[in-house]
Image (cartoon, rainbow, N blue to C red):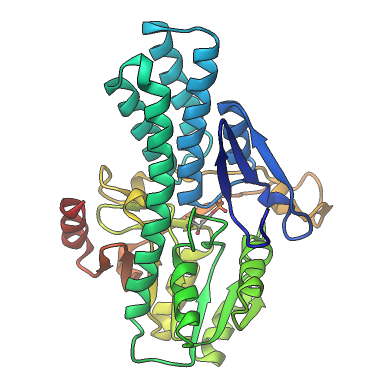
Length: 350
Ligand code: MRU
């Protein structure tokens, strides 16, 4: 395995996932042979980040079919079992729409394909979804970098992890940062540690250091002061689900950053591919926000940092209202307000 980090690989009949829960201390891989193992890895964030979850789910559906065929299921029985697997996998994490999008793609392809060719066709489609994600990351990076084309010495603040670990390619928001760094235009990237599970510290920190991007790690509650003191040029983050009006669910803490940006007159950009848009919902009110294990908040790493029985509220995501978003960087350019119109046009272009 190369030193460069990657989130997932398909090898013949196995989905290999880098176990992100162990980073940065240990590099270990999970070898998923079943859809259930894939769902479990998604649930416990061994693989995470909206686009990576989507790609993993596509391969998870291949694993489901592989095993159902081994059990000699055919006809209606096979169809029922495959759709049941899709429902189970899509339920592993409710907020990132890429997951249900990828499962939907595999289900509809299965329904259109004859049984004899189903496994082959579904494997090809999962590989396509992975390759497409990689290409889209490059395009988003180009669109995003274009926003800053006359600028140097940029100070960018970001949240959570949106890089190679969160996608099949160079990342969403991190891809833009990566491109700006390649072009020599970054002075410093400020990375929020991203409590409770520290995706910013553990994962973005690792990716920034690996790519030798000048950076400073900050705790989440330092963001306001950093904006006031460090002349932040833009905040760039990813997304887990974007409604038709532009309201955006992303890692909890994103909404706070958007509010801070409005106060400090700092542009606030979302970066996301088409598969993160939920064109079927009109606003963020319809987004199901995942609530996770209270121990994620009570603990810091493996240690309790709070009374073991203290009641906890642990939403994994929040929704940033579209009015606080400067632009949404996509593979087809930057969408600008009014987002309802821009997103309709984006949907038509797909
Ligand atoms: O809970 P996670 O780690 O899956 O949350 C990830 C995020 O919120 C990312 O910002 C989002 O998926 C965009 S990723 C490219």
